[in-house]
Amino acid sequence: MCNACSKRFTTYEYIEEYPLQVVKKDGRREDFSRDKVLNGLAIACRKRNIPRERIERLVDEVFEQLIRTGIPEVPSSVVGERIMEKLCDIDPVACVRFASVYREFNDVEEFKRTIDGLSPDQSGPSPVQAGSAHP
View 1 (cartoon, rainbow, N blue to C red):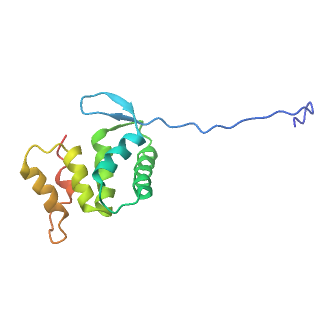
View 2: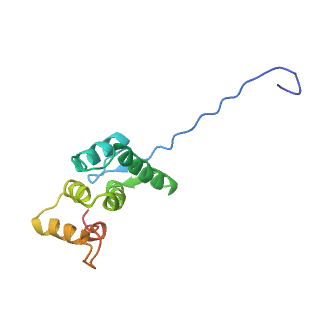
């Protein structure tokens, strides 16, 4: 109710979605796609005992981390590395599967280094650190 004229009015509030752009390896930009990330994770997690809800929560956590940075564009490599960090904590096998597609290993040695980084008895870099030099 307006105090000056005594008329009723309605205001509406809308949540403004923050568009996060992902910069691909070839320089193209596209909106962050939750579904695209979920599909990649579903493949990596196939036949693993990981509830779908946990995978969805992982994607939401990464998206929110990226949004909180306030940076409107993020390289696809950053998205992939953040996904891998969380996935390795949940299931190392799914993490290696995801890395094998995401990092596009050029040879078996790169693949071995990632697996070695997951071994609990190794003091080497994590699989995320081991492959972070990959573009």
